[in-house]
Length: 327
Image 1: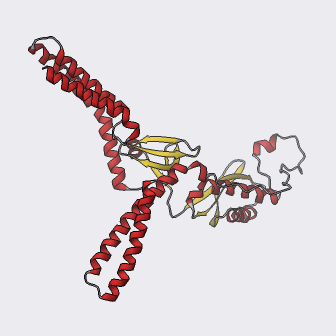
Image 2 (image 1 turned 60 degrees about the vertical axis):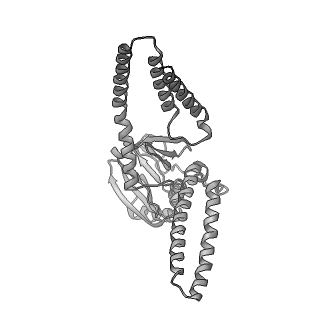
């Protein structure tokens, strides 16, 4: 009995050491899980060293077993559900690290895809952790890597004909760097007409910058044409003459060009996406090397020489990738 208690105490000491060293190594369990295991081992050790009869000890162990079983049963529902949801997301593969994702009110780029959770880097550079079960039970909108539509909605008064406005808005979208711009009339309100200005953005990594640039170009285009953008309620309530216009003065100097904010905001998402790209390239090169080595067995002398050069080039790239992954 004393030997069994000593074994339990030794197990507790090992778990404590793992917990203390966890920051320096990769360990699949959280600190809370380690502390739970330590607590369970300590309870069992206390039961075994208690000065009670064998029958009482067995009853206490039975009680502890029932309590632990109940705790596991109640907690495993969410635990297992998130794990199964993580496997489902991996199987579906509708997004990867670096992709823009919107789930409910959360919007950002994917930085991590774990077994139990998915991490997003938001527009404020913060990290949002979402349980995988939440992603499975809610619609997930993924911005396509091949390109997306960037659009802006704005309301303009009925005193301007849509034939006058649509070319201005389309030119603004083109000036913002969007391809194949188009303008739609989406709503006829009681006091104003709602327009949608949109265009195709091929480089989705600059999504935030493209949206801001489109709004700026729309402002410049409408103000440059003498068209004011104010609400009908404001126009009805202002104490101004009929000929007055609410237009900002044009700046003496053009707006200063700034670096794309995405480079600062989504640093972790970019790093994780690059790592996944390197791993995918590594696997592809390994398959190509295996195919070249297999083909060299049946190749002629001249073909074998060319294959050896290709093999050396791919192995050099493989070494470079391995060095980058080690950093």
